[in-house]
Amino acid sequence: MSGLVKVSGGLKSVDYEVFGRVQGVCFRMYTEDEARKMGIVGWVKNTRQGTVTGQIQGPEDKVNAMKSWLSKVGSPSSRIDRTTFSNEKEIAKLDFSGFNTRY
Image (cartoon, helix red, strand yellow):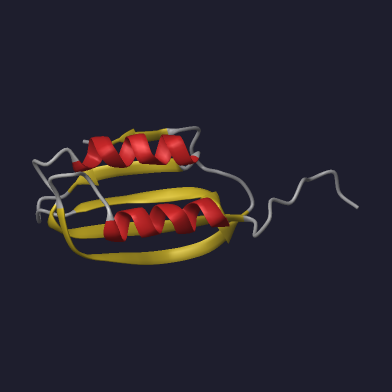
């Protein structure tokens, strides 16, 4: 037996990209707030193509909840047309200590 505590479902990491009206509507700020409330780590940033991209990491159930938020909720003024997720994998440890906006 190792001394590591296994979180139910383990830790997950997933990259995301959100398409729609997601720039100029405080999408990054709301994403950061929501991730911190959920206890998710990672980052978010605007792209030149008018989308929002980033990475989220945390316990599988929280990552799934954040994926749902990124697909359906977003900021109050945003319009999410679609969200793509890629590079979803189990990880041994978190790569980030918090959640922040990149520029």
